[in-house]
Image 1: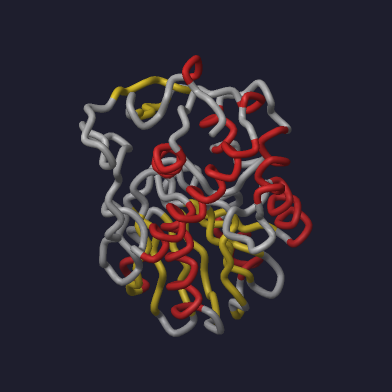
Image 2: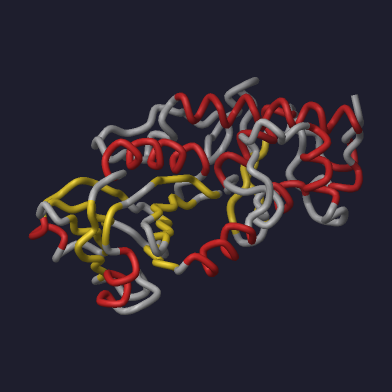
Length: 269
């Protein structure tokens, strides 16, 4: 599922591709793609798009009277197309000039068109953005310590605490920080938090620069080039030790038993 780095790239590409263009129709063939009927979505979003932003793992395309919240779910891709292609896609924005932006190959994703009040409520439901300049070590500590009994990975992937980090990059960040995903938030010392913040910044910025992970395809048809060092890898990318897979909240978590001390062995350093 695309996470912060992939959607950061998507938002930048959409900014260049669609800002200032007039939306004529909003389409949604896949069940659940739209939150309202296509005619209603078209009436809400119709007219010029003013800006594109990223919020967590979603791209937000803003018109004059509504915002379209785009979530790619599992495997979703966005590409430029014709109006004819749009009729066959899972979801699409059709522009006044007859071209379209289509969303396809998507599972569990959506294109929700929300009026201003609902859009603002959704925006505020997310937690802090880890790439915001104000997101320092103190901000990280505040976001995590709201859930002191939570496992560290569960807290990192809680979108109401920190927006944009999912399964893949949580694994990558925790390896970089040398922290075990099952550590309880309350056990983190100041040095742990500093190390975690540095790892978060390093991993996310590297992945953004790489255009996301290799399975993500951008609007330009090019895949990202970030290569995971731990997530679903047979051996640790730092030390070469065979990895261990755990189940946390129903998802696979990959751990290096050498680089990431188990909770009973963890120590602040």
